[in-house]
Image 1 (tube, protein in one colour):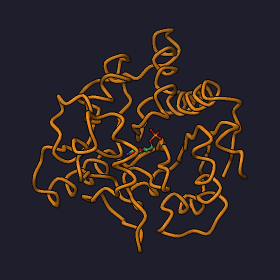
Image 2 (cartoon, rainbow, N blue to C red; image 1 turned 90 degrees about the vertical axis):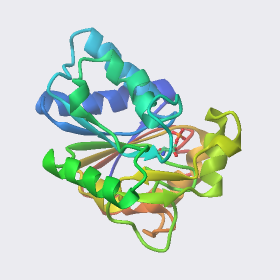
Image 3 (spheres, rainbow, N blue to C red; image 1 turned 180 degrees about the horizontal axis):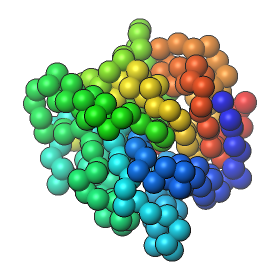
Amino acid sequence: MKIYKAADYNEMSRKAANVIAAQVIMKPDCVLGLATGSTPIGTYEQLVEKNKAGELDFSEVKSVNLDEYKGLPRTNDQSYYYFMHEHLFDKVNIKPENTHLPDGTKEDSAKECAQYEEVIRSLGGVDLQLLGLGHNGHIGFNEPADAFDKETHCVDLQESTIEANKRFFASADDVPRQAYTMGIGTIMRAKKILVVVSGEDKADIVAKAFFGPVTPSVPASILQMHNDVTIVADAAALSKV
Ligand code: GLP
């Protein structure tokens, strides 16, 4: 694992955007695995700037997102579809038909998840997967469990995740209870992985996930087994390692 220590959130965002830009420059038709949450917002802002400045071309880039709430229509401003359009897709020259997310409105979980795996496979797999880190060590929506889930699947969100994400909804009752997420296997098959982490509230989980034992009770710990992981974290997030 390569660990880059950034002074603060802005520097973390700039470094992470540079890693993504390098991937797109090396392979203009690459497949980017994208993430939501508050952490990557600054990274997306930097990518938008680079695209506007003519330094970065998304015209051949393809994207697959990690996860989506089950039951939220795409027009809901808390859906990850909405998030990605708001923060990136509508602001850069990526072709809408080249962007993919699980469809949270599909009721048949098994069918939707199998189809999503097929989309990723048909694109030739993910070249660079961007990840945030949940407070309980989740990546995508792979919650702490007794075993690592391999493929895209439907998850029941843990209370702590519902608590953490309720700030974006009118109340905790409005947070969906389930989500579709790439599995740990899907994530681990990405050729490269980039993790962004910011803030003192993530310091404990950073220490556990990247310096503790590999265990499904801390899903992100499996990243220690991947041979091309870059972690870009600010000083606060690295304050306990
Ligand atoms: C959500 C997302 C994750 C994200 C995590 C952390 O639950 N499903 O992909 O990494 O929260 O979010 P934040 O960056 O806001 O701390």
